[in-house]
Length: 362
Image (cartoon, rainbow, N blue to C red; front, side):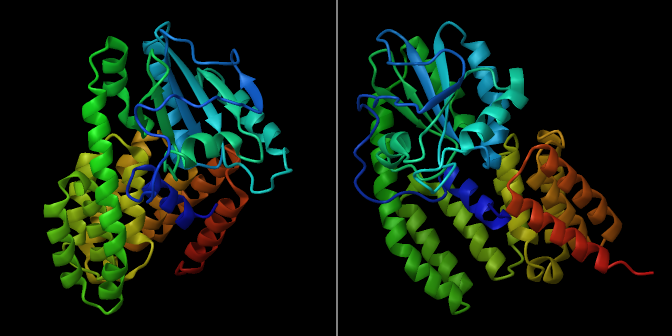
């Protein structure tokens, strides 16, 4: 998976894009069976016992945001040990319905993680039975995504695992207002449908260079659908960057402040600003802001995620510091090799390193 695809996957995983249509699996629905093809860690979960709370989190070895979420999920598993059973299920590892070679990849990854992945782990089969029954049925098209199953065996919450601390505590305590949350989900789904209808028009305005008009239209929609405020804020940033607008830096700063503890989100904002040179060339402040956000992402990830290091390298390049760019890009490639990142991503990072070196002045 290349960098652009990874950024797109993150946007979806954060709920910045969504599935539009009638979802058959919702909050309040009975949890589907967990027909795991292979268990690679922990005690297999054959059924959801009444009286117990479960977290089922969907992830993949190639997914950067998933990797970043694993330590947090492990912390939650330890914190609620004896009260919650946490299961991580690897999905979307292959497009070939007959290919099971990735079983070994997942097994090796989990073994390397050791205690850092402190919960039960299983793998979906190549035909994607679990992904279809859970993710597709619930209209979830991005990972990581977590489902919390309450003590009655029903789905009580669906969302990003980095956001489940509070609802999980409330579900364990029996104080979670599932009806209010279900209503909120329905409102968001309706708002997403309206947003989807508007996206084509926004795209036409942006393509025509009418970026301010697109922002005005987005503002009108936000007033009608406040439940989608965060999604609108992200789209606003994208429009500002595309239009090389001066306000892009401030918008990125605003979003970064909201997600200051989410390394993947911060990485996403920084990469959006520096992927193309137009914005930072016209507004040098954008390069400064992107660099600060990328540095925060690197600190949060403890320099342990290759594509986040890759973003920092690009930020230094846009700042004009070639040697710093080379230094961090080299670290990114080394980390990518260590974590067995997708070959396409490593190749992409290697090409960027070559490009950086070609810009050296003697």
